[in-house]
Structures are given as C-alpha cells and as structure tokens.
Length: 127
Image (cartoon, rainbow, N blue to C red; front, side):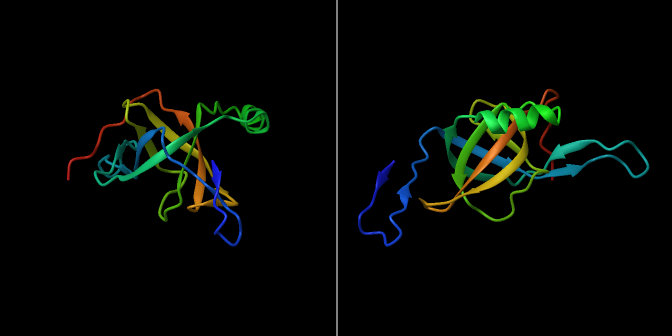
C-alpha cells in the first residue's frame, strides 16, 4: 500500500489483486408450507478483492460463538451486501458472509468481509 501525497487525508491506496468474488443474494425456493430450501439468486455483484489475514481477536471472538472464520477479504464498499448473502470465489468455493466491517483511512472506501465455508453447496436459482 502506498501513500498518495496529494490526498488531503493521506489515505492509503488499497489494491485488490487477490481475485474476483461474486456476492449472491439467497432466496427460499421451497413450496409454501414446506421446509425452507436456500438457493442463490441469479444476479450476483462481482467485485475484486484483496486477501486479508484473520486476526487473533477476530478468530477467537468467532470461536466463542462456535463459528469458524475461514477467510477475510477486503473489497470496495458497495451498498446491498449483508450477512445473509453468499460469496463465491473464482475457485468455486462458497462462503456465508458472517461479518462486514468498514475499513477507515484507505482509498477507495473498503469493507472487510469475514467468510465461513459452506459445506453443502447451494445451486443458483433459475429465473
């Protein structure tokens, strides 16, 4: 990360060189009255990301709540992403978004997204 001297706040420039992630909304595809069946909505938000390390505090805070944080990625801040969404990386792995944190003093505006691996693969809903 490099400092740009012409920025008034001296924000650090954030690169997104680790890969591409698609963020899907989840929908309930079950018939009314049946057990809920999650599927991915077929209109993902595609973002570039930078892999972050899972900090000790974040790791143990998740362990106290019986959650295994598998990855933390940093991507540009966009509206409409929440903790009910699913992130799919370019290698096809699916992750549930567990936490979204705003990152300060970087440019462009970014968020750190904590990801938990999904064991049962979700299919994309046909529209």
